[in-house]
Image (cartoon, rainbow, N blue to C red; front, side, top):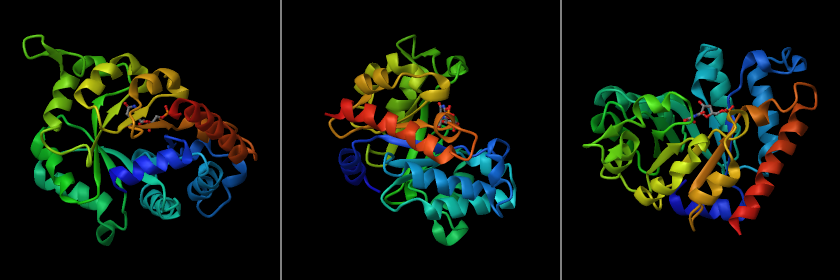
Length: 273
Ligand SMILES: O=C(O)c1cc(=O)[nH]c(=O)n1[C@@H]1O[C@H](COP(=O)(O)O)[C@@H](O)[C@H]1O
């Protein structure tokens, strides 16, 4: 899905909600445990329940990898089930020397290789340009580069002063990455817990989409993120995972997820006008 289509989707659905499919087999409602593929059964119900309110889905690959071959199969079925008009993100946080990154890109982008055909993959910038460039070799696909993450440890490196104390490392990451690709193939991750930095980030990346995780379970404010981050084209994908997936642990889990997603979408609609 390209920049214009994503922007149009956000306007049509009045939503920039990304549902994070961080499906933890140990947290599934007990009545699903007898299904042949409990993870897929859960994801299918969550997707059906939340699709009216979401523009994107982001399976976090760790939750699938940890299940071995069974997990990869659940991931494949989940990706195939996500409606075609939704943006899909493999949250894999990859990045390695060039030839290895090339294979990571192939794994998530080339359907004829591993069967997966995501729109985007999350990538760590730490190894520099040659670790990121191979992901841009797939026209129409996106890199979502970690810039300023939501976790407390983001202070350890990302907030360190660099360049004779003129800026912080996450700012250098954004500036440098902007020389590698345009806003039509590159997004940045900015945690919702970092909303006060969004004004500065918008100076460096005025048109880019930002993937913003950290509302819900991590306590970030949707109001603050929206105020500082929205652009005329939308420009935000705000992710919530646990607060939607595990809104109820009973047989009504899908209804509870729908209610949670709907509440977020309705708040988003008020910021989009
Ligand atoms: O890249 C990410 O998606 C990500 C970056 C970040 O800075 N913080 C962050 O929480 N995430 C991911 O976003 C999701 C957040 O989940 P919840 O806190 O349950 O909504 C998880 O899959 C995290 O791995």
